[in-house]
Image 1 (cartoon, one colour):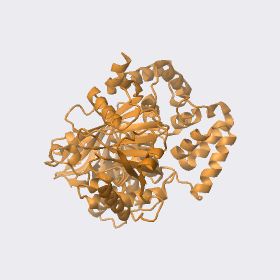
Image 2 (image 1 turned 90 degrees about the horizontal axis):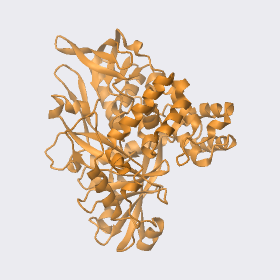
Image 3 (image 1 turned 180 degrees about the horizontal axis):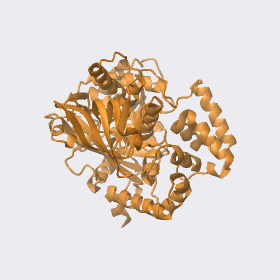
Image 4 (image 1 turned 90 degrees about the vertical axis):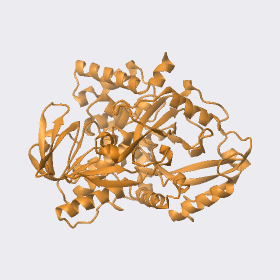
Length: 534
């Protein structure tokens, strides 16, 4: 993946996609596979906003059954099952536990009925994903860190997990392989019109400070929160802020779905890269789109709700990292954001430009197919969707289980310890062989970057060389999420930056700027952590 802004200049495209999150990536990938000439531009890095601030889940949304949103759940569950099959390196099963206490808002019978319906909608009644019930003693044994007083029992059920930023990156890579021109750090300045119809745009190079005039027969806007901030978008959208905390590991490889005591909302405790994600919040947002920060009150809320269930209470000192993102939802008159629909729709403005509104990371592929169907209809192209049940760009061609075992064995022979090997394979799929070759040339690169996390030096170097990262935080937040999973002081940041400086083309001055940039941005977006350090 190489960035080449010049490929945009004075070109005629069938489709210009603005916004490089999950919806933009799927749209560009689908359209390119159908033979359209496609340009995808993103004003920052790939997945730099909402699409790297999710709960990292590929799921049907069990809680939406309470609001009787069966259509949304069934759609998401069908996508979940398909993604598990075609991208086993990118989407993997994750089992959830749901405790039932004597004072739980949803009792045993109601939860049993809901999980039976969930499994039925996914056609999972006889699969490994099906739910199971446990009595109080058995459930407490499965989750020994949960309080067992008044615990009646609980359930487990199957869903799935991903690395959201790498999911987007893989789709962008696939779009490029299919012929799309994809450029990050390219900011949309204006849309051009002829006779009232959108037919192009001016895009500024955020790195070289030049610009490109792009001609496009169709334009799709997948910019999420920035669409919501536009004049017409304010009538279409509602912004909902969600916050997650990164906490120490718990002794389980299963997640938990819990209900907040204060307001009845659902939240999750999820294992991820050897740490624990705690989230999320739901609150209307009208602040600065470029500085969405984690507030101390949001940290306090999540800790308090988790501590209603944990035997040993978490404190602010246990918070390792945090992140905030904005969900875009269809405008509604629902009082609470958590009650608003998570469904998706496509709007078309008077000038013919299309706008993607709402949606979920799980169902973004199907929604993107609808976008491309609309574009193709406008262009007079009769080519069906090419992404359904298509293996991902980095999915190994061989049987996945056998391939995974062979890749793990090779990793062990190269000195990569087991946990690092597992995550390395999930992060890169069939491209992991290229990282193995880096280690063959320098065995020291099999070592971890920081001892507590499973990321290795060769992975970082590979990302720097060939994954279109521009800045240090592109590498440390989205190519691998070190910035949220560890507290990296300036000396560690500098050591990491020195490791990749040659690959990134940084001299000493550029290296200093990158380290300073990451230190400043990380503290600005996590004021709660800054307060803890003072």
